[in-house]
Image (tube, rainbow, N blue to C red; front, side):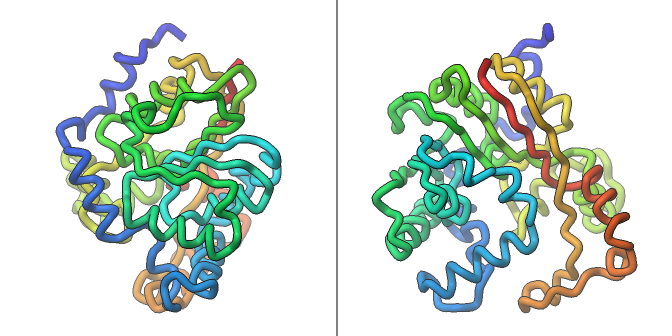
Length: 289
């Protein structure tokens, strides 16, 4: 492929002027999945419910992450949030370095690891992933994993370049980025944008997360994400599109799981067909040759 890193990455650079402080403040104000349980925060019951709800709504994550595969391996997780996937890598027997921009998220993740007796195999660090090597000493990892994070930083290309310092021949890179040709993008356009196509990038950023006003959200096509990986010398081995949020939001925030009418009446095989073509999550796996 003759595409260069600069040419490819510049095509999607629309939030380059947003400050990293704005991104940090947004995620500190409401860490991802922090409201997945009404139980007292920091308790075992709270974390158990957070995990159950996350994997109920996003059941494709364990299959994508392949937690058990990394037993005895070294995992670098970029954007650990409050640590749901982190705990599962640790339970599977991996040694994990978990980084996040949000100090509030990291505090919860650390508390979680200690509560479940897993703190001895994980190192948490607060990091701007665009400058990862300034904080985390470069060394090879068996897996570099990032689920739904890098598309929220102003310069994703810089994170990709940093990841190159942490892989070796045979290393695996797994990441989920938001998918441009998804039901979610169309839903945002119809619900909030009134078909204002010219304002789509701002609309998607504003409404991409449960808490409105996210300062940065990029989306990618399969070709765009593959090109970014291949430009760094990685070989894409698997690409999966998944996850359509089917639940009615008013009930969902009350921890009730009632699907919206048009998905409620859709046969499960048809829904899966739809989800695997127009899902919000573009999950891509690559290896270092």
